[in-house]
Image (tube, rainbow, N blue to C red):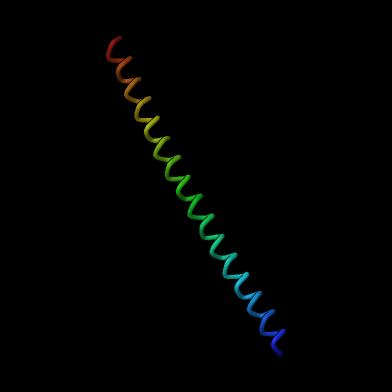
Amino acid sequence: MEVVVEIFLLVFWSGIFAMIADLKTSADHLANLVLSRTYTCHEITTLGSLVALVLSNM
């Protein structure tokens, strides 16, 4: 009976650790998306300002 309980606990905790690892991975991906979006928006804004500057000097 003790072996069954030990196996159950091992499987249970392995599942918990897998879920925690998946959540951390998802959070890392989300953080990367936020950084990527911020960088992209900054580049578009900078490019838009550059185009406006060039057009105003024509």
